[in-house]
Amino acid sequence: MYIPADFEIPNIDVMHQLIKQHALGILFTHGNSGLDANHIPFELSIEQSELGILHAHVSRNNPVWQDIQDGDEVLVVFRAGDAYISPNWYPSKHEHHQQVPTWNYKAVHAYGTVKIRDDERYVRGVVARLTRTHEATQAEPWKMSDAPKDYLEPMLKAIVGIEIAITRLQGKAKLGQNKEYRDILGVANALTARGQQMIGDAMHQVAVSKIKQSCE
Image (cartoon, rainbow, N blue to C red; front, side, top):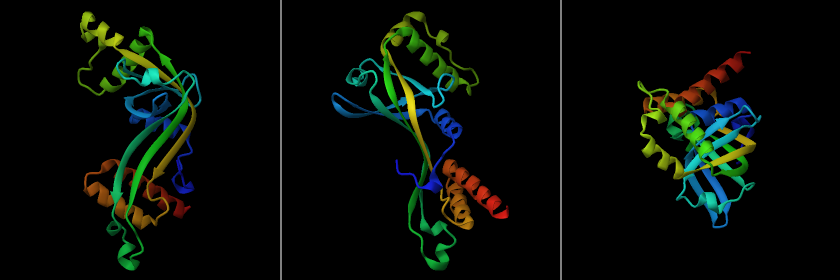
């Protein structure tokens, strides 16, 4: 991924947080059948590795788990929002007209080696942890034990686990950091007014950081 210095996310903890908050990743593989991409929710574990280990599962009917081999290099892309940016939102544009459209976004690329985990204990653990994490905000969280055993067991047998040991992380937050404070703020306010809170809020944070730096 091309990352100009202004847009780099160098902090591993920040990248880990983005992955946890935006768990649906795109798994890119290059197996026997060529390039493939699958949209999969991942669980990130950082207890046994500095960069982390990703855990997921796919349908047994999905050919990806048979198309790749243990040890193959894969890429998982996580995104945390994106937004089109109009030149009209930059106050400076109305003075000198030297602005062009762009697209802002936040993303993390996780490179790693894959291992197929075709065993029920692993799959059950992945499903249980994903469920606990994403049901936590519900008033009455759903639990695996809520489903009848004779229904749940065949469901678990119908999926296969995927484990990815992360070997490299790249993070990019393209949020107008190379712009003037007033232009960053102008875009942030425009996005917020249009209901695009994710990138709008992120750019407000950049604007605040920029003004603090100028005061130091």
